[in-house]
Length: 459
Image (cartoon, rainbow, N blue to C red; front, side, top):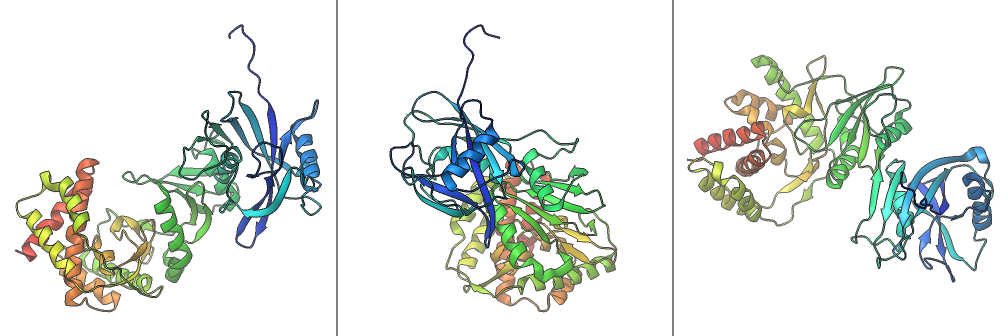
């Protein structure tokens, strides 16, 4: 320990006054005005501690002075602590954010010389311009995390600017009760399903998303998933809210969404993984027919949409650049020929798709019926695009292809047959480029297997 002067920082308190709005949780924000710091910017009701005042007393006082609401001590709960350094000056400070969900009185502007606006805003649609320090605390709060660092650099803007430098570093807490789930995700999941007594990570090794199987004290089971990025999170949430309900008990049900944490909780399905399972010839054909019915229901779960006029040529060439050293003779010529054929096909209609239809995303229930899960790649796409990866199981098994289409309810048109071959070739090249660069031998071999099959069909 050094013998110099001890480091001290000011402490301020921030009120997260929260209510349930029609479109989701809302928080009360006020707009600073007059000769105060960050004038014109939105901020939570907040203030400094008076001498000999504890943090909860300060919060209750500031809430009364700024908004007129009356809060009882037992209704104050700790939410987030932010260590912040403003862009002007080098002295840091600690901001302690408290959540309050019960109070008396109607919030209103009590200090018009310091505040010229006050309103409720959705947590997922915060207004601009907002104080960056306040936004850092709310970002940690939305993610269910206990703390954040927010050290700005000299000369940076006081307000939060989307696309600007992100100085917020969110901090997780320790695992609770030996359950190895990050603190913020644990809090989010328990808010959705109650106390968790068991958690097992079941993430698929090749994806960036993480998945835990959760157990409750009464024997309930759920799955918690944290997506690797906003795009996958948004796709899966949209699918669960719009298309997946059409599958009924043959797919999970969405229980909770954590937008800031990019996480979801879904119900568990009573089945066993199909991936790696050995089925008899007859049973696999029955499975494919039932799977065709299930996929058909998904494709019909929402109205069709016309496709935009797009070409796959540029994207295919990028994938070819990555896969070229690993392609067999004739592969590149085949793929480029199919790309030219694809460009000449009529513009297709698009339907809701699973996006990653293969055995590893299918369970079998006790009756041998398929169940679908993992909808993070769901999107409007061609019906044939949803058959691309599944068609790998049809190699050398025309009976499985016939069984699937029989369950699907119709045969493919000649145009769809060619489109399926084109999309399958594109996926194969993409898989080889990805698999060789990410050390994924299964995806790489599937791509080679697909191109060999297509070369025999299109000599």
